[in-house]
Image (cartoon, rainbow, N blue to C red; front, side, top):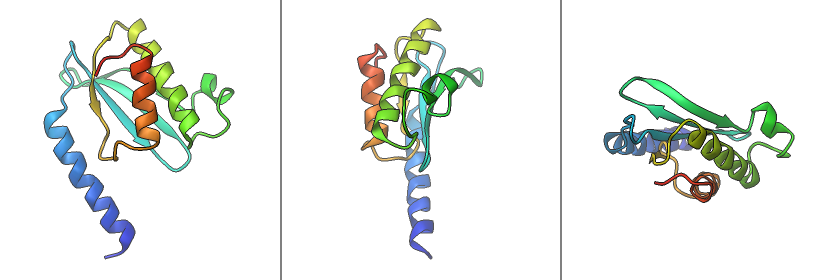
Length: 122
C-alpha cells in the first residue's frame, strides 16, 4: 500500500469517529471543514433536515479579492470570519465542530479560531 493511500485510510477512520459524535440539529448545527491543497471551505449543516444553512469558501468571489491564495492560513482566517458573519445573519450562534478527519492544526485551526473570534460558539 502506498503512503498516500495509507494516509487517506487513516483520515477516513478519524472521520468516521468524529461523525459518530458530531451531529447537527436545528439548535446546534454542524460546522464541517473541507480542505484541498489550493483551497479551503466550510459549511454549517442541519443534519436533521439535510440542508446547508450557510457556507464560505476561499473560491467565493467576495473572498477572492481579499486573499492571495486559497491554500494558506490567511485564507482560512478569512473564510472562518465570513462564515461566522453569515451564520449569525442566519440566526446560528453555536455549532458542533466537524474537522472532517483533518488534524486540528494549521489551516483547520486558523479557520476555527477565526470563527470563534467572530462570534460562533463551539
